[in-house]
Image (cartoon, rainbow, N blue to C red; front, side):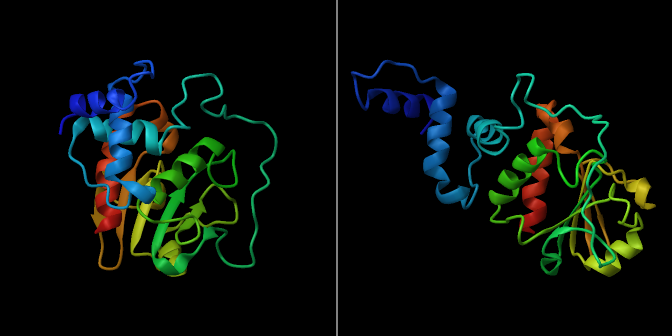
Amino acid sequence: MDLMSVEYTYKSLDPSVPLRYNRDDAAISFISHLIPNKMNNLLTDNPAALQALMSETIFSTGFSTDQGGVSQQGNTEEVAFDSSSEEFVFQGDKSTGVLFILRYPEFPYFSPQAEEAFVKTIGALQLTPHNVAVVNLANPQNPNEFKRIMEFFKPTKITLLGVEPASLKLPEIAHNSYMRGRIATVFNTFSFEEMFVDIEKKKLFWGEFKNFIGS
């Protein structure tokens, strides 16, 4: 079934309804039937369907083109970072071995738009903010040392979201590439803010990230 047939079927369900749906609407409708209940399997190779999935389902909020679509950083107010009696301040659950490393000086964790995109993205892979760990290295309490990160979190899958590997004294890792160690694999990718303004970065990220989490 191609998207033209989906579009035709969708339009002809009720002849009295104005023909206001375009091909992208049909693709999104098609995806919703292919991938019900939070997109359980994410199994489609249709290029138009994948494009609609990425642009409308996962990142719809963060990619708004109006002036309010992306937070303006550089807020001069002091950020109220969380504190903790533990060595690191983090959100979520570190026992699952899935760790996301950020560096947001202007926010305790993500920016509001990035947080929403993050929740939608991991939700598509049956994860939630409660069963992964998120650490912001801009928090002055958090050591920026990879060895201490490994000792504290004991992760098996680490995603660097806009954090340069060199800042953790790691070898160079190309964007959307991996460094596989004896215990953990490090996936180096873009920040959500970078993906908000570059659809190619968004596509590259999603193609690798779903394989990384599913492996």
